[in-house]
Length: 406
Image (cartoon, rainbow, N blue to C red; front, side):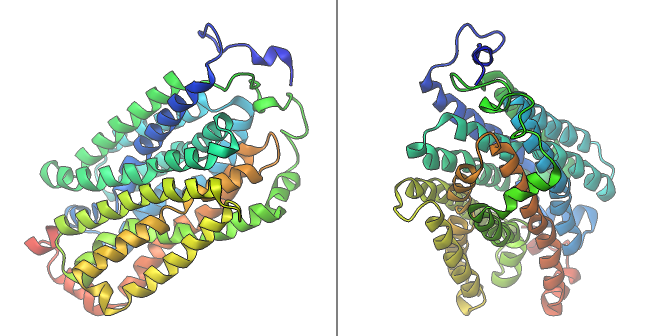
């Protein structure tokens, strides 16, 4: 590590004290929640969007996929940028792009424009997950890293819970564009907070956290970068991530519609169930990640437990229990805890599996591969749902009935 690289950041009298890690954790969690606020609320806005724009289920799935499409490439680019330039401005500017896209989207004339806006949002959001994870991993020692990662990752279900509670009634009262305006303002607050408050840990290099500029560890051929995907720990994270992000995406985009169709819950009651599942996911990310700090079997054991629990919950949804309002609510809460909570220990496992100086690249690369499931799961699930004609026709016969809207 070069000694000149440890100089304080511009405008800072001295490096921040180790206790500043809690400020970093709070800031990263808030920025995560703020940046994902609108996107996590799209599924809960299914009925208002259907009624306002005349959308089918597959079109709703495409809306969620649109915000996740650019990260297929953007996450890898974000990982490179994070290793080269650090987290502060890469994450701050990314959240700013999310805000700008949503604010512009509040002027969108219709469905096509909304799709285009969400592509822009996806480009900015590409920096948030790997950047926030890398910032927390840099500040926390292994004994606390899982817990800290879990708290930071809880920002996503926290943002989702707030979005489910706020956006549908806002869209119903003032129109769907008002929801984009609110999402843009919230994302802007996250961007400003991260740029203003984040600092590097004491003694950490400006470029690539200790890897000298020009080092082959930082910049290498494409084949060398893809070689990270052959690391056993990275392969485990990749395969489990592909499976579990499909569960999370399905809950987000089709949860409200499933509850409406299978249990006859109105939009308000279905929204309450989704809020409960997101809050359970928030607790799961913290609790399962904290468990990984103490698990003698390693950080990956809580991920395996979460996968088994998610399979059990999905199978239970196909039984009569899943068609009863109380039973379905309990199962959605279970799926929230494990089907969303798995990400806390998973991302801590992945960050520690990365080679020195390449944490950003490893996070971005694996998250980019996982994006395939994020992008394909919502429209695929929508097509499966369309293959069930009885329920589709029930919705199609009365999209403007009071029961359909709330």
